[in-house]
Length: 294
Image (cartoon, one colour):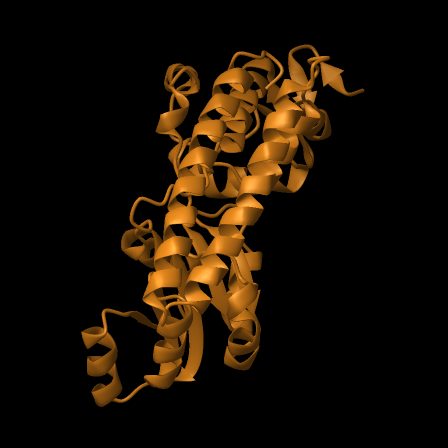
């Protein structure tokens, strides 16, 4: 039986909220979101918990991290749902270099950053960095701290903050890395510490509006569109096109850094296009918030 009175099995809750069973169990471990009742190994959630989870899921789809929602009361969750779209939190876009940090990121159920690119090592990064999207931060894992990898990353992403994870390092290179303004951490390191370094150091490009919505959030909004006019779907398609163009302009800007005139043109196109995207994202958020299905 799926329901017992006002109690719902965990599988039913997952279907009704869109929150996977594995994620519900992780939230129970991390944030104390315990079910109202247990029968052996079977978890049952109350109707109030079901509604709370629906509100949390809506806020997560809007860009709020679960870590900022778990401790809120039901009244605070409802209030946050009524906030204008400009209150949505923007997640820094991060690139990862190294299998260790990539595996660490993949083990996380929730994250304070958006992993926009990943490379297995520096050689792969050097070969493919030109095709990567604009990044707010680059996290690189090094067996031994040296300056050359830092200089390589700065060359490819001059505006991104750099977080270096090292296993061995001499005092000389530790001092030089700090002088370069690099955030450094000794391996092993927790993912939460890496996130804090990325969110604290990452700064948006001058006059560049970062993405508010991930591709998954855009797809969720488009799939929930029941308007015969297809308004939401059309807006999503426009935003996806602008995402692709801004990524292309960011690549052109990095490639043409040595040419002041062409770099200025690409920077202008990047900034103006990103601002246009931000306005469309605001319109999409306003329309979707008015729909009871989103």
